[in-house]
Every structure is written in C-alpha cells, then in structure tokens.
Amino acid sequence: MHREPIPHPRRVRHRLSSVVAPAVVGSIALSLSAQPAAAAEPQQRDSAFGHDARALRSTASTAVQPASRPDQHVVGLGDTVSRIAAQHGLRTADLLAWNGLDWSSVIRPGDVIRLSGNSAPSTPAAAPVGTARSHTVAAGETPWSIARAAGIGVAELLGANGLAGDAVIFPGQTLTVPGSGPAAPAAAVAAAPAEAPIAAGSHTVSAGETLSAIAAKHGLALDAVLAANGMDRSSIIYPGQSLVIPGAAAAPAAVVTPAPDLGLDAEQIANARLIIQVGRERGVPDRGIAIALATAMVESWIRNLDWGDRDSLGLFQQRPSTGWGTPDQVRDPARSAATFYGGAGDPNGTDTRGLLDIPGWESLPFTDAAQAVQVSAHPERYGQWEQQAYLWLAALG
Image (cartoon, rainbow, N blue to C red; front, side, top):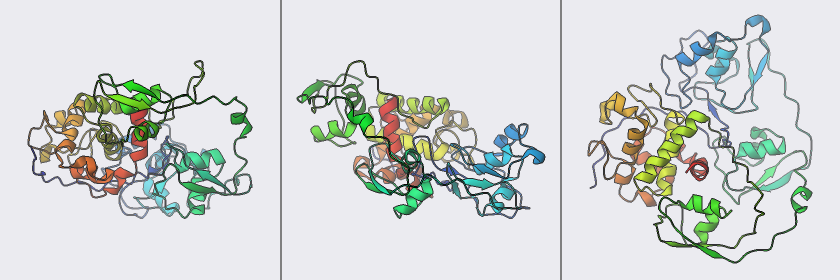
C-alpha cells in the first residue's frame, strides 16, 4: 500500500565525494562554516566519517608533541582534518585556518596539510615527467585509482580533464592522464597466450543467486551478462529462470582473481553484508540494495553510530522523533535496514516510508530514489557512491 511520506527533517550532510577510490578518496573535513582559531568547535558533528569529540579524546594520548611535530602532514586514506589535528595535538579550528579550509572542505589522499601557521608546507616531489596519454575508464575505477596507477595527484588528473572535485566518471569515458610516468608494460599482459573464445552458454538461476554472483561465477563483468539478457541493474531474476551467458575467454582453472580493494574496514564490511542480507531476504533487487549501501555510506560511513544530528542514530541516521522506532530499535542494524527498504513486513508498519513504498522507485534516478526515503538537504551525495555500491554488492553479496 502506498503510504504518504512522513515529515522527516534531515540534517545537512557532509559531502562524500564520488571521486573516491575503492579505498575512499575524499575525507570530509567537517560540516560547518569556517571559524577563526579562537572559536569553539561544534559539540556534535553529523560527519559521515564519525569523528566527533570522542574521536579526538581517543587519540589525545598519542598526539605528537610540539617539539617533535613535523611542518606538514600528507593526507592518507581515511584521514580527516579532525583526526589529523588530534594526531598532532592541534585544534581542528587552527588547522582549518592555517590551510585556508572551512568546515565543509574535502581533503584527499596526497594533499599536504600545514601543521603550523608559520610557513607553507613544502611542495611534494613532482611525479616523473612523461607525455600525456589517454585512459579509458574501466568498471570500478575512480579518479583516485587512476591517478595512483599513473603516479600523479588526483587534483592534477581532475584539472587536466576539467573535472570538479565531486565529478563522477563512467566506464568507457576517456580521460587525459598528464605528465605521468610510463604505464605498466603492455608486454606483461600480451605475454600470456590468447585464449580462444568459447560459445555462449546458459545458466539456470538457483534460489538466492544474484546477477552479480552469476557474472562472477562465469568470470564475466556484470554489465556483460545484463547486456546479453536485455536487462539493466534494476532487473529481477527468479529461481528457474534461464540466463544467456555470453562467450568469454576460458581462464585457466589455476588462476585466482584477486579480491577487489573495497576501501572498507572489517566493521563496514560486516554492516554492508548485513544490509545486503536483509535486502536479499526481502526480495529487493540489486539496484535497491545498491541504493541502500550508498545511502548508508553517506549517512554513517556504514557504521552503526550511537550519535548524530539531533536524535539521528544508526546506519541510516534514522530519527526516533520522526517515527523510525525507539533509539534501541534504530540502532538495531538489521531492523534499521529493514525499515529503510520498507515494503511488506516493514517493522515500522505505516509510520514511515521505505524504498519499496516509493511508487515507481525502480525507474527513478539513483539519487532520487535514495532521497525519496531520506529527504536529505544534499541529495546529490547518494549518486556519487553508485559505482562503489555496485562494487561492494558484487564482492560481498
């Protein structure tokens, strides 16, 4: 039954840039306007990376003392301004001011952060000079992963292609890779003898199987299986259904494909698997599960938070005060995922509206479908995680 949307005021979300690598490129600095060094820091921040005052206290004991503090810090994966400040015994407000940042600024791996107000950080060594070349984006690639492979900075890659910091790239897109070192030798790939193509086959769907799992089983990309069957990522498959498996090169049985770098830690992987499991149990198609994964990344960094903006809690930052359940219920990750999906058997009944309750959600743009449930002040952030969400689903679901 269609349910009218429940008023659901949302807090302002931090931008989680889609130019993240599988290991997450953009770390959200923090989410308010810039403050002078003397200003008090916010008591609570709705950060998708979950770095609040407690995170600062937890790292205070290992903070670098002024006498041994370096002049600069090179941003690593998972770094945020607040974490860097705590690591070096500094105030976040000071660090922002010294680097010309504000509370909504995005920092990325490879960026250099000044650790004092006295001098500018030294310029990192330039990448090996080379001739610009073109690169065709493959599925799962991000600006960060392409820049890393080329030995250049993300900002340099984006600038060469006229892309903004929150740009989304797509498989098949051609990018200019400037001044990069030599690419990996093609001979390493060409040295292996070419395998003869095999004829297209078929696969009968079993209970619990997904399109991504079937594609992986046959050593194919998900898009190849979808195209061969006239499907898209919102398609639903059923036990007993026969799928066309397009011809592919026969891979030696001894070859083991390395697991993709998902950019998630153990806690995030466990929560992502739970979100996928709940979706499978409720018959949600792959696209709906990908929307849930991307939403959880934007809302909580796929962590079951016990804090948030106002009374927001849990994986999806649902609010008890707007009908999503008691605080304990909202922090039950399985229940929280079930209420996000909604539909028949929604634990909240008709009190809230989940994804499956949105009329025509399957045909809505990725961002719009997530926004219909979350009602966020920054809906564009959900779509920025679409590629990664499908990567997580293929690897974990």
